[in-house]
Length: 105
Image (tube, rainbow, N blue to C red; front, side):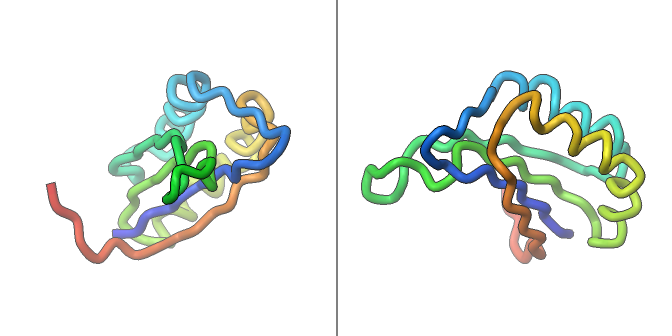
């Protein structure tokens, strides 16, 4: 299982519409990726470790079987999904793909 983390850095002048992201953008991603996307989460940055501002204003995490499965499901819709970004933020996302080695409920 892999996790694709899309993180939006917090910086001076960054705007982010959390409501749009969780109710419109992420459901769009799910509808386009279909069954390949097992699960997704949406995080809203609250604070840094010592009470500082959060490093990221928001994060979306996609759980998929493999990098290849992600590319096959996301790739054909990448242009449409990426074109939606200006509807909720002016930040440039940082993307990290990682292997999930422990998952507990």
